[in-house]
Structures are given as C-alpha cells and as structure tokens.
Image 1 (cartoon, each protein chain N blue to C red):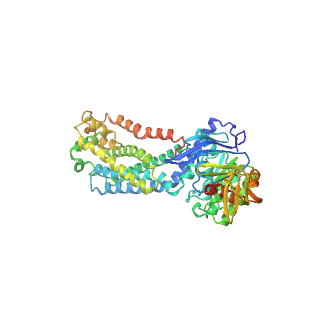
Image 2: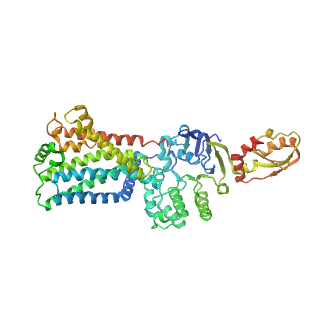
Image 3: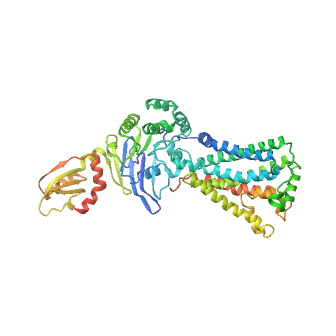
Length: 300
Length: 287
C-alpha cells in the first residue's frame, strides 16, 4: 500500500452476520483515478464490503475511509459524492424513467439535470417509459445514469452486469468504459466475471474467504504470475518453490504456478531437468489459481 | 465532484434535507394513495350507510365503524410502506440514496398518519352529512345494547357535547383518531421488520389481537383494582374507551383526566417512538 491513503482506504475491517464471519481483517487502498476491480466468487464478501464503504451497515471492527470520510461518521456525505450501482438494482417499476431521474435528483445537491438528459439520450432511454417495462439491459443503463449524473469522483459498481445477456453485457461495459474513463473518475468495480474486469481495470484485488489474498496492478499480476512446466529431478520437492500457488502433476511433468516467476525460476532450476517452459496466464486463470489452487498445493 | 474539504453551510444542509424529505413524502403519496382512497371509501361508506339507515343509534354506529374498521385501517396503513418495498426489493435502492433511514421511516410514518387522519375526517364529515340528510332524528339513544351499564356515562357525554348528536359524533371521531394514531405509530415501527406484506399483515393482526386482550382487562378489572386500571389506561386504544365512558374512572369525575391522558398517550405512543427512530435511524444498522 502507498503511504498516502487512496480514495478508498480500508484497514483491518471485520464483519460478520451471526456466527458467519464474512470479512476477516480486510485491508486495501484504491488510488485516485484508478479503475479497481474487486474479484471474488459469489459469497466472497464483495457486496458486504461495498455496503460497509457506503455506510449502509456498520463494521464489527476496523475502519474504512472513502474520500477521507469515515462511513460510520458521515455516510450521507459519502453517498452524496459517490455513484453507486447495486447488483440486480431494482427501482420503482411504477415510475416513469424521467420521473425516477427527477426524484433521485432531489437527493443530490450536485445533480446535473442537463448531463442526466444527455446520458439518457445517449443510452437511448425513453423518459416516458415505465421503469417496470424496461429490459434488463435498459434497467442497468438507467441505474448507471443515476450513478453518474451528479458527477461523482468515485463510482462503485457492484456486479453491475449480473443477469444480463452477453449482448447487453457488452453494451453496458462499452458504456461504462466510455463514460468513466473519459471522466477520469475512480471506479471500484466488483465482479465474479474475470473477462469483464480484465479489459477495464488497471488494478485488482482478489477477495476470498473474507480476506484480500492479492492486491496488485493487473499488468504486474500478468508479468509475475506464471505457470512453469518442467520435468522434476529426482527428490525434488515442489513445496520448496517460493510463492507456489498451484501445482499439477501429469505424465511425470509438473505444471507449477508461482506468484513471482523470477524468484521461482532460480529455485526450480535446481529441481528440474532442463529449462522450465514459461506459460503466460490470463486473469481468469490467475484468479482461479489464487482461489482454488492452494488446495492442490496441499495435496501435492 | 465536491471534495471533502469543500465547505457546506448549515443552511445549505437544511435546505437540501428539506428537499430530500419533500421528495420522500411525494413518493410515499404516489405509492400509497390507493390505500387512502380505498380506506376512505370503505370507512365513509360504512359510517354514512349505517347513520343514514338508522339501523342502530348514531353513537353505536360510530363505535361499530370507528373501532373495528378503524383498527383494520390502521393495520392496512402500517403494514404496507416498508414491507412492500422489502418484498419488491426497492428498499435497498431507497436506503442507498443519500438520505438517512430515519428520514425514510419518518416520511413513511408521516404519510400513513396523514392518511389516517384524512380518512377519519372525511368519514366523519360524510357521517354528519348522512345524519343531516335524515334530520338528525333518532340519534340520541346510544350504546344501550352494547355496553349496558355505561349508558348513563354515554348520555352524560352526550349532554357535555351540547346535547347534540353532531357533538357526540365529533367527540367519538376525535377520540378514535387519537387512539388509532397512538396504535398506528408503534405498529408501523414494529412492522418495519416484516419481509413482505403477508408477514406484515399477519403480524399486524396478531399484535392487534394482543392489544385487545390487554384492553379487555379494563372491563374485567373495572372498579376492582386501580393498578390494573392504570395499566390498561396506558393501552393505546384506551382513550377511545375512556372518552366515551368518562364515569368509568370512578375516583375522577367528568373529563378532568382526559387532557392528561391524551398528552400521556401522545408522549408514550407517538413522540417517544419517533424520537427513538430519529436517534437510531441516523446510524447505519448492523445488518
């Protein structure tokens, strides 16, 4: 983490519901201007973390700051200056699009109705259409409009494409990229769909089992996390490989995934016959390695 | 984006909060007005119908309508605002707006309360018109068949109300409105926990039955135990019972105790719960 706290700063955050501890000692920093992806499987605690950031629930322990404001102190100030789009956001079906936009505008002092109209036209949303009659894709676009029309410096998108078909998802992501990158705002994008995050985000954090198990720029992750395919020498012990994430043994060869390829290469040189082959991984494979791979290390 | 350091004056904050509250109220009206119209039609229709038909005396008709139908209307108004939003999953969208839960709940409570008072007022005016259309004939016999022993007290009330059925009906309507408002507030707050309207309705019915079981102690222990009577006097609906039977409090004569009791009820059943909502609803909940 950098010395100066980011737009979002979380430290030692804990949250449980009854006996179930959802977040355990979570810490992360989201730098200003970044597009930050929070990756996690369903139930990893992504939505809980976002609800804590917005002050919708209180943490059991630890603290977080959003734009230097503690949500426990002034959640409304955070929500006024943040654009938030919830997963499967359900809005008032009986309202018309224009009516809903006008109603939501009353809660934001910095609402820009001209910009909202411009976004509505660009997103091809009919002001007179009933919200309940919109398709899922249109509903997502309307939710995005509501999250952007007050010019927030931080936009939090919680699994925004959940339930969308591939075409609607592609259109939505194109809108997100179009509006957010141009505006230079900080984006906190949670998703369980890796291919969705990969082209958008410049940093990612992997949340698993209530903990952040990796937080790094995407490029750095791609450069350092690699798979090495090798033929092990007699007596080689894969557990000695530094930063080992995953190992798969097939036909007498190992496919070893490591967190830092440079450090692992030196170690593997002594336990491999010949030079290991290096395989690049996409974010999907890296995520899978972090989340599932560890168990396979135990078994190896 | 306004930075965290940009000053916002207290006046701007107040103006913004007023604007947000007005928006919440407007939305509640748009969403819940069908309850108001339906409730008004039912309450007014039944009261006017009974008063005009003169099947029973006016006071009895007022009691028969204001009490059971009024109590059902309270459940009807209290069960909807939060439970329906939870069931429709719009609650998450609403509370994610930059507005406190206290303001959301107070807007919903206020709209329900205005609708309740509006329904009672319109029903009373309609009842008076129905009585007027029949020349106020046959309106002076009250309660005789219903609560036998208290008929004298009721007649005293009639005398106090200028000996006119209009006064009597207005007094019963006022007492009923205060009593129903006192029950509406705690019921509304309790039913905010319900996940859907069915659960809310069931909860409302069970709580109202419990309330009447508590109130029934009044008739069982009347004149026997002051302690029981004091306990029952705290029942939100007891204003209604005691206002139409002032002599049932044997050690105090007439209406001396009515203002004190009304103030006590408004404090305990309306102001204290609202103060609590305003205090707790400023913070985020634990889940």
